[in-house]
Length: 296
Image (cartoon, rainbow, N blue to C red; front, side, top):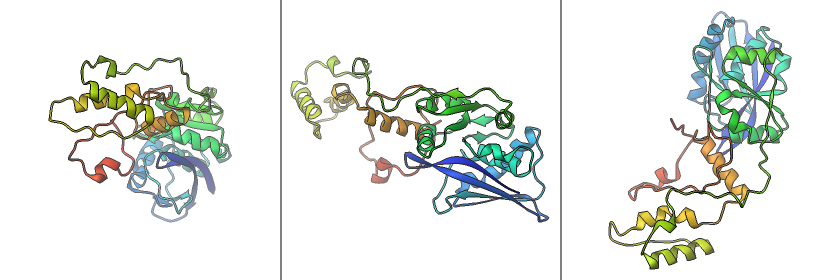
């Protein structure tokens, strides 16, 4: 029997919906075979899903299970497919009604005991899911505040695979309505308190004047001087005199925080301008970055 579920995958700081197709193959050797340009982290989910299904009191199919992540021509990475894979396998094995998976997108990493762990990139995933026309999102409970930033979604937070199954069967807690409004204009009355503020600096009149001109005109600024003359100290205070971020800029920064795994317990957009201080010996590759990392 063919069962179809839905998950989401990240591409940079944007996301797209992935169709999870699962079918059973009547052969002697069992296990899961995942296709669709899945990287090693997804291939390792075979063992996590198997253990989580058994730990939650369900039967794992003894025959071979083939899972296709479509579209198959786009590379996919991360552990956020675990929950969708587990539920779709149970639907294929007729332990739950597979038809109930057609209108819900599932995100989450499974632990070996069946608990659902938080994943990075839930904010861009929720935005991509809404743009694709879906309105129900099942996700780890720890990521609820992050997904609530996107207006117009019915959110189902879960902590275990058993809770996820109960929701699919209609026995779980009612969905939570997301209440964010990413299109609303940012509040200009809100005071942003920076830890490093330029008003704390005394002296350095020429440097401060140059910073104010650069901030007002959106110019680049190059500071040259002997070690200890205050260049880094002044640079750290540059965000405190920059104009407030627009809603589009705030959303872009918040998505970066989400993909990096830094937004799990936040329930609002990041409105404070970020500051990064790479070492002067950093390479071009390290400065730009490459791939999706996870902050512990």
